Image 1 (tube, helix red, strand yellow):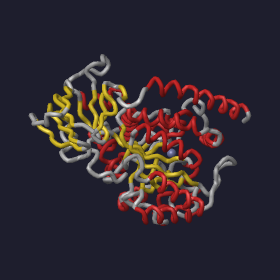
Image 2 (cartoon, protein in one colour; image 1 turned 60 degrees about the horizontal axis):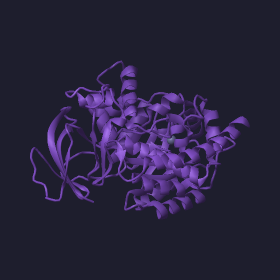
Image 3 (cartoon, helix red, strand yellow; image 1 turned 90 degrees about the vertical axis):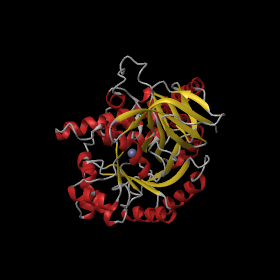
Image 4 (cartoon, helix red, strand yellow; image 1 turned 45 degrees about the horizontal axis):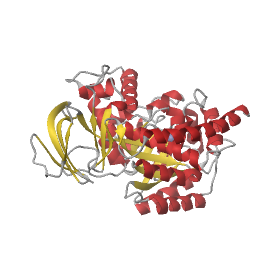
Length: 445
Ligand SMILES: [Zn+2]
């Protein structure tokens, strides 16, 4: 790990939505100094940022990386048919196919400025996924999706004991691996695919070990109605509240079909919804009331979800969609303003996942941050409005440099530690062998 003296970067201030030309010193894995003119150690490598925008890196708070190879084959299906096909395909993915699927997903995330991922994974694909995460060098919190109530004939159902055993195994294999970049979580699929007892026992497991609890909430209208009937309560969040699931270490992917009372419960317990707009729109789940959540002071985060439903691993594209949706839905252009979006992508996500000293560029913090180049692209060029234009006019490919834990993983838009051509060469073989199996499954349905 080296020392870096970054000159001429435009440091973003989300309070004023302005930038300030400044210098940053990275020592080891920390941001050691920020200032107009700083003294750097003689061995520090000087990087002239040439006016690039300096931003904290992003936290993608809901992902299924094994679906990276599944963007395309599941386009435009109704949710029930989509889910059935997804389960059937996932059952036949080989470890090698999954390795490259996850590697491409993690590298896409890094390429677009994400250094932290919150992953809901599949048990039979765990080892190949963990290998891919290690090789990608990204930070990830990993839990296994568990279900004990079948949603269709292809749902892999397990007992509560087995879910606890698997959670134990994830802790042993993942927690603290890759030099601490990987962490374990508990990640039941959510109501109504999990019994209340499974949710309760897994929550206790997570709390005993200080782990994140990651689940889906209120994604489908029909499922929400099913839960209302099953529990005799107003909705899924009320049921989770009664089960003792909601709390500051709980992440709730989607959070669409919720009443005002349920939004209050989420605020009062400190749980964090994860907004995944591409998925919500593409598979027609509905539009969550993010504006009302933020108004209540809820710690709303952002996620790209699995690419079988979102086709996207770029947080900037997700952020833009999120902002436009709420502006259009509320007829209020001031909601989800760019400063709020930046906070959802950075500090809110890091806080929800329990990362301390991350999500902001300040002295003493961990050196996870980005340099963004918009001056060499005719579509985004406007040196005076970079901060807003990165969200509204550009996409994650404008990221030039990614620092993760004080290391440069991306520079000039290219990875420093892995050969992209070689990855794509092997990925092509893996994706073609998987596509053949997918064709076979789809033709038989
Ligand atoms: Zn999901």
